[in-house]
Length: 368
Image (cartoon, rainbow, N blue to C red):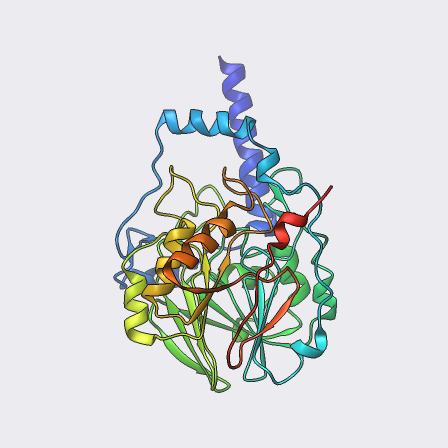
C-alpha cells in the first residue's frame, strides 16, 4: 500500500511539473487580473460562466457508451485519405476585394477593407498538447502556409482550447501579426509564448472597439475553456463581429445554441456572412456544441444573408461521421431556404456583392 502511494505521489508530481514547465499549456491570469474579473457578472468564484449556466456532467453510463463508440465506427469518423489543400490564390487574397479563405476546422483568413485578419489559426498537425495523443489533422501540413502569408493586421482568438489556440502556430505567426484580439485571460497564454503585451487587446462580452477602420465586438457564446487539469474556465470564450465598409461579418466561436444568437442579431444584424460552428456535437454534451440544424437556426437568429459551417473538416473530436455535419447542414439549409457555402480547404471565396458558389460535395471525393 505504501509503495502504491509513493508511486502515485511521484506520478502526480511528474505530471504537475510537466504541465507547469511545458509552455504548450500556456499561462494563467495574474492575481490582479482575477481581482478585476471578480467585479464582472460573468465571473463567479474564480471562474467565467455562461449567460445561462451550463455544466459538463456525464454519468458512468455516458462514459461507458463513449468507450464503446470509440471502438466502433472509426472508419466513418475519418476520411479515407489525406484531404488535399487547394492551391492558395495569393493574388485573390492580396487584392482589395473582401474575401475569405478557409484552412479547415475553425481557422480562416479574412480580407476585409484590405485588412488581413486571421481567426483561430490552428494550423498545427494535432489538436493536443502532446504529439503522441490527440486528433491528427486530416489534411496535408498547413503550418507551412504561414511562411507564405502576407503581414497580418489582426489575429482573433475565440477561446483557448487546443483546436483553436495552437502553440506551434502562434510561435510561427507572432512576428507576422500586428495586433492580437482575445477574450479575457487568453492574453496570459500569448504573453508566455513571447507576444508583447502591448500587441494584445483583451475584451469582455459586448465590448466594442475600433481598429484601423473596422468595428470589433466580442460576443457571448455558450461554451467553456481551459488547457490544463486545474484551469478550467479561468479564461473567457466568445464569438467575433467584424464590421467593414462593405462586409458585416460574424463568427460564432464554439458553443451550444441559445438565446444569445437572437441578441446578437438584434444588436448588430443583419450580417453579410456568418461562420458558425456545427461539428463535434454529441448527445452527452448538447450545450457545448451545436448540431448542424441548430447552426442553421443560429444563422437565422443573427439575420445573416449567408453562412458557412465551421468546426469540421480537419479533426475528429466527436463520435459522428466526419462528413455528417456538412451533409446535415446542407439539408437543413435547403429546408430553411438559407444560403450556405462550403468551400474546399485553401479555397478563397469573394465576399463583395452577391455570392453564389456551389459546394460540389468535395468531401465525397477523398480516396486513400
